[in-house]
Image 1 (cartoon, rainbow, N blue to C red):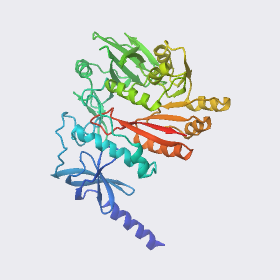
Image 2: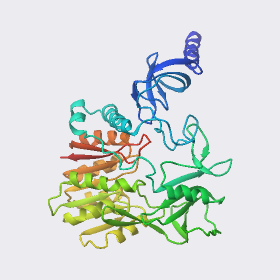
Image 3: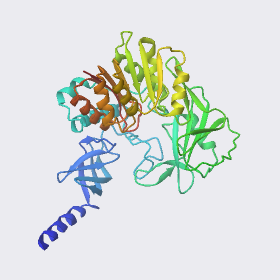
Length: 433
């Protein structure tokens, strides 16, 4: 028995001794999470800031199970798709708000397509033939830089506001090339240290109005003043928004429609790309007139607003009360829309009990995806078409496998790039019984 213990200890020592080694690697693929992927002694190695086709030397920095992590040291052979980063905060150990500034934008799109296909295969267990037939070419963003109408920052221990580092801590930033220029100008003008706040969000509406949102850890009487032309709101620990100065909401123009979004309510930050997302959503819905639609995780009602004019009836479900209020406001012109406040799990349970009937379900879940209860209840309702909008390739792959196991067929997946210079992949998937 003692010999066995010594043998196991020897194996652990041999494995951990790889840390600190300098190795030569050929990057073969891009991994979900934004790092380049190679193999070393049969183990996958993840190396950030690299591209497929590159040869490098790297230092093994850690391991987790059968996976190694490394830091690039020297670039031996560079990819023709490598680009010079625009931001001084970009690089190893620095700000991790974006991960792909070293890649030409035209090359980012096929990489995202490949990563999505890989996740559908490895996590979703989908056959290659199905992936090839369903997966459409990715739609590019209309603007690869300065596209975010919202910038969320964390308090840095050293002072100032910034974004998470690649390793640990917060990198205070003085510029961000993904944020709308007005937000960057506001960040440079701000001179404040509101101690109760751990997170600060700068938002810009389509009308140019600016908003400052503080998320605070404890309720207290706010003492804030500003001579800047902006609104100020607080988000309490229970997510309740408190208006302090100016407006409680921002206004956004998407296509030909205007939407209100209260502080704290979810709104995708690449406002300029959302018209393309809505167009792809409507194409997949293939509305003929008269369909009944269930809009889940509906937020401020964007999807419902673009569907209601051609549908028979739309039922919107949202759990965050301020977003429900926004949806009521944004959909006031439609008499065929019902707005329900509640969790998707509970509302669907009631609908199953009542044997409700819908032709189409739209689902825009959080990045964690849909729960087992949601997928099971959608199947019990017998909804003929489910259109799933995802911001997480791994969650989409997992939920695709669940829906297919319940009898749904994957008809189409339309990737759309809403986050250039990052590894994030958005996609719309259509499932039918």
